[in-house]
Amino acid sequence: MKHVFISYKRDDFDFAENVKRCLEEASIKTWKDDHIHAGEEWRNQIDQAIKNAFAIVVIMTPDAKASEYVTYEWSFAVGMGIRIIPLKYKATKLHPRLEVFQYLDFTSNNNDHRPWKKLVAEIEEAAKVALLAPVGGVLSFIQQARAGLNGTDAQVRKEAIATLAQANTTEAQEILVELLTHPLADVRQHAAIALGDMHYRAAAPVLGTLLQREMVLMVRIAVIEALEQLNDAKALPILQEALPRAHPDEMLSIVKALGSFGDAAVVPALLTLYKQANTALRECIITTLSRVASAEAFPLLGEALQDAELVIGRSAARALLYMTSHEALHVLVEALCVMNKQRCESLVHEIAAHPTEQLILALDDAYQEHVSAQVLGADREQNARVRRRIIWTLGLLAHKKAVPTLLQSMDDEDVIVQRETIIAFKSIHDERVLPALITILRWRSEDYDEKTLLCVVQAVGQIGNISSVPHLQAILEAMLDRYTEVAVQIIQVIGSIGAYETMDYLKKVKYRITSEARYAPEKQQELIEAIEHAIGNVRARIA
Image (cartoon, rainbow, N blue to C red):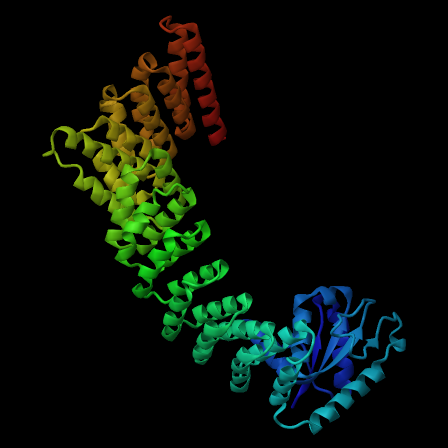
């Protein structure tokens, strides 16, 4: 048995309950969204409830008028050809589509003055009309939508097509396909969009034919986007054929659509088009090439990494990263190792936001390839330059997957590689590197300059493991006489991670510094201030 659907804004729940009670007392079945059970797909439930209604009561207020949900419900019912009965509960100007229906005025604060009997009479009349309607009620609203396509109002035509798409019946699908030959361009456009959204693959041949003869740009773009959504292989040659003579705006849509097929047959045409394309189109071509993932595109993508326009280089870097094949990543790594540092840094920052595990493996492969001790002379120096760039790049990526490579590069024969490794450790907070860092501080500090040792101490501090405190205390004595800035940094790290007993140690260091006359006044003051600040940090942390 059909029912009356009650559409309302949540704020008007109590009044909606009164409407429901009034109708049910008159033996009229109602439906309100409190019928929906938790976990159910509420939109499908509401759509079905509207389809099963012979009338819909719309409780209108200013907030209800602004509500997307209420608007959706009554507009869907209009498209279905269901009787609409607006109830004006609070003063508001009705939507133009609702103004055509006779509303009932419930704005009075006196319940006795409200037209409850009129409401029941309207509903009973709607029920009688529904009983006399043909059984094929669904067909009637489809036919009603079809009739709306011949009106003079473009918005009405658009809504009629939306109704057909929502119905998604065989008849509605057939009507939408027919509309691809409609004399009005906006109808053809919205029909194509609807068929794409519905993924109605049977429409692909007709869409392909339309693309071959359509002259209106907005319709052509809608057809291209629909073919992309349908992803029917039969459309591929049609899109390829349309590409050379396409309008510039249309080219973007075609190139994007070609990527959805994943067919390497499109690559030659894209490579040719790239040569005379503008920046936006070149970006789109690069993205499509990444989706096709053909090795034929590697030379172009390699060149694009060095393009004068940085946005093209970034697009190419993302494309090669997404391809994930060993060959694609080799092209990317090779380019990163030879381009200038500024360009390399920009590209690495661009791809660091994406999954980079495979790239890190490729960088490790390149490092191992250039680590051979058998090479001499100029080639040896060239290999060292490549390793420096690789380790520097791993530091920019700041990914824990790089730790095994970095642990190896700690013992690289090249001092600059070692320094870049330590800087990379600073950006990767991983406890696996702590033993290597402690080794540098305790037993190899003589091999490094102040700047590098400063990075080591900062990296230890960022890891924040309290087990490193005794080692920091041991190296502090040497650093007090050697590098003031490193000593201050060690004191700060001890203060940031040390336990209660650390305060006693720091007080003893302070006493020695103040009691011995071996430091210049400025240095002594700097060290004392660092110690006092560190003691304050420990005290605040354990309080």
